[in-house]
Image (cartoon, rainbow, N blue to C red):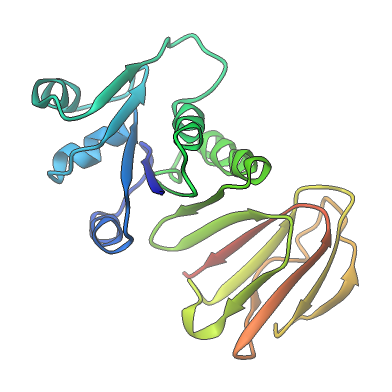
Amino acid sequence: MKYLIVCGGNIDKEFACDLIKKSGIDVIIAADSGMDFLYQNGITPDIIVGDFDSTRTKALGYFEEKGQSEIHPLNPVKDDTDAEFAIRTAIERGAKSIIIIGATGSRIDHVLGNISLLGVGLKQGVAIEILDQNNRIRMIDRPVILKKDKQYGKYVSLIPVSSDNEVSLTGFKYPLDHHVFDKYTSLGISNEIMDDEAVIDIHRGVFIVVESRD
């Protein structure tokens, strides 16, 4: 089952609507004000979660009246964000993969928090990716192959999450051979795929990989 979680950050309408149409989504979860985007574009979520402190339209009332969405109000005083609750709900319900949109934007605290939540999927064996029109963000602890003709953007950046790490990069402009990253470094930023395919070979550790375009 492929789940889509729609959060309340920046969402490019053309990008998101095309993604929803073409990605074979089975279940859509709106996380709080993520429902505003769906409401404005005539898309009904299967599940709505949130404390509803940031929704800015008539979306909640509309979806309540329509009666086609499960609605789960959350206590505003809680330890997890609406996005985290949505991710854990998707995993509990059998998601095999999760795409998150609306997870990036002007609130850097939320962006960093959302990126850290990729680790929830990593622990549970569920592939999660954050997407916007310029970026694809994942957290990995095993080898990944990137094909040049299917790359998300021109640049590939690798950021260490764990201090105990070791990685080799082949097929890139800047290759590495069993390199150990210092946790506080920008060494892995803005690499480029040079061969037909490139390999991020994680020997140990956890990394964030970002495929991006300007």
